[in-house]
Amino acid sequence: MSLKVTMLGTGVGIPQPGRSQAAVLVESEQPLLLDCGAGTILRLDQVGASLEALDTVVLTHLHLDHVSDLMALANARFLADLPGLQLFGPEGTGEYIRIAKSLYPNLAKMDVAVLELHPMDSISLKGFDIFAEEARHSVTALAYRLEADDRVVVYSGDTEPSPRVAALAKGADLLVHECSFPEPFDVTNHSTPKKLGSMLKNQGIKRVVLTHIYPQAAGCEDLMAEQVIELSEVPTIVGWDMMTLTL
Image (tube, rainbow, N blue to C red; front, side):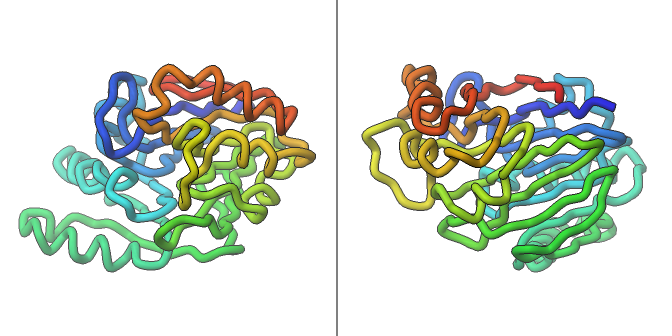
């Protein structure tokens, strides 16, 4: 059975053409959504994803550009008289949902079941074995390794280049990794091409897709991919919304 990865949202909190906020749809036996930033609901409809089948979301962290459409997705299922949403995410996810629901009395009866995850946790979900690891960001954040049918996809979420994330991605068929800014930006909490490329060398990764692209990278996308390739020796492209990869 093939594994399909659709880049629903490859952008950040700043609007830009062709890029909604962070979201990745991974499909094996069943669909699984990784992050749910603004624009995700629209992108799901555009790729023909079934609202009925999509009942599970895994969050990397709680920054707004990764969760903006989460309550909208839960509300859509509620209005369609579908069962509640399963939500997995880092420490603090349960409190976030409690507060969000308290702001909208009409959603008080909406069912969102939350399980918080921690680095090195593992779960089996929707046909995937999922492994969590610590990402290096400004808030508590996780990266995930998803294994199904001898295929491996790793999603970094937001992170600086991290040896722990690189080790998580070892041997992956596909690594979806943030690369927020082009060279010569010097940033913390996010990745740039040269540091990322150096970190990924010799990890046996087969393919990399760069995501979480800031407007400052407009026009530099091909160069960013080339710089990662030069240092990592791994085939690399920059992701765009609606891009689909089949493994």
